[in-house]
Amino acid sequence: RVTGAIRSTLDFRVLQQLDPTAFYVMGRSITALLGALTVVPVFRLTRRVAGRGAAIAAAVLVAVSPPLIAKSQLIEVDVPLTLFVAWSLLAALDLTGGLTRRRALVAGVTIGLATAAKYPGIALAIPFAVAIAVAGRPAEGAPERRSPRGREAPIGWPAALGFGAAAMLATLFVASPYLFLDLRAALADLAVEREHMRLGHFGSDSGSTWMTYARDWCTAVAGGPVALASLAGLVLFVARRRAWALVAGSFMLAYAALVSSFAMKADRYLLPLLPPAFVFACALAAEAGGRVAPAAARAPAGGPAAAAARPGGGRAGLVFTALASVFVLAALAGLPAHLETLRPDTRSLARAWFEANVPEGSFVVSEPYGPPLRSPLALQAMDRDLLPALQARGDAHRIYPTLEVPMFQVNPARSAVFYDPSLYRMADAFVVTGAARDRYRAEPARFRAQLALYDTLEASWVRWHEFPANGGPGPAIVVYRNPAQPVPFAARRPSPGAPPRLRDGPPTGGEAYFYYAVGLDYELFGFLAPAMSAYLEGMKHLAAESGPWLACVERAANLLGKAGRPGEAADLLERSAAAATRPEDAARLRGQLARLRAGTR
Image (cartoon, rainbow, N blue to C red; front, side, top):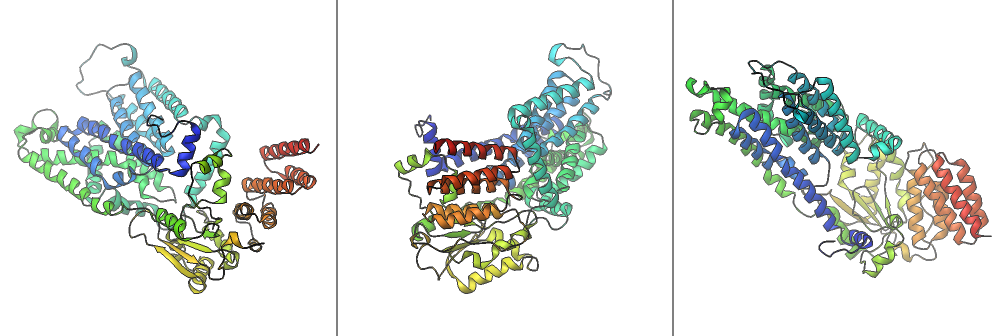
């Protein structure tokens, strides 16, 4: 609005459809800013425990960390969580200096922000509790001071827990209100995610979680030097019962145990462990430097780490600088590989190629993670006032009837029924993506049906174009052309043929959505009878998919109404309302039935 690019909410939505670049840049800029801000709490935390030199080294490690840089260029939640983890550990460390209302509230707010960013942030409650326990220990040799008043007045541990919990819940409500306002839906979503985490993600559910994360931590995330030094530092400083080590170490152990309990694996889950790992590694480097300092230099308060942190520490400074340099150089060594990935996404390249070389109205079947083509399904999801505005602004995107082959992250063998080559005889093009193909090829005995389709494409279709990944963003993409269809789908009049029909078998949970997408493809291009047939097939799968089932019912009733058969449409809506498994679906269908009857009087 400030730059004049948009003047209304309609302009905003039109721009998002015509060229979403500005929105991606905006979202990625926010993530990049949050990633850069992580330097601040890591610097402050390390300075508190190991001095300014170690703090500078830790801040540099944040700034040059290849995984943090890579994920800060994307729109996702792991980078914000990493920032809030660092702030929360700093707030917990403040608590160890004495329990006050202000410190408890700040700590609670940071835990709330971390949990709102991503639910595993709730693990920060562990170091919060540890900090309160540590603060309750009497400090050796601490002079008595006059107790301040107000927010800085000392409080007991029950009050600290109460203030922290209240601040956490209040912050979570402000940042994610529908977690509370629509609790039933939130609990249902959490149950789905819990099942997902328990069963794993297709392609990442094999092998030991601990071993996978240990390997990723030492290679792709922390790097060997930081991984080893942080582990040694954690053991050393926890054994010495340093307050900060107990706080930071408790989080590392709790969070590592949490993510390792999932069958689902992703190296980005380890990012929140980087801030405390950098602190431990740099504190160990400072400790090592302090150990080689002359005895006289180690005498003052602060111990070896303080000696190494002072400028001009001689041998101590050299040792510390050498160790810190090893950490930083190991991180810098990973940056060239990341820079190699900064190239156009294969999906964007494939979309541009399609719109330049494939006639509009060609039927495109695609595996997941294919090019984002403008499809009837995408048009149906748009608000009614948006389409005329897009046409008025000269929307140049071609429209393709598009059908995505389902891929199931949990129990992926269910997709076999959708890999029947006979389903796609009417298609003009088939898009195979490495993101799906490579996972199936990794287990050939388990996914024979999927591999058989690939063999059919190679034998009977023509390779039209390829987009290799070559280490860049996006999967490898291969586009096949169907030689049996010389005329594009939309131009096959009076009918392109019957819509695909799945073979009978146990329900997979993807049938209704499959038929709904097929029906939209046929309906938008004027093939109403086959579209009606597809919707009716989708209506047979209520038990597995109530949402797509409802969409099939509504589209079928709409087609009957347009065909001048309101009585049949009313009967369909009435029967479907009685069969609906969700009260809200039944109420919606009855409302449409009432409007239909009112309009025919």
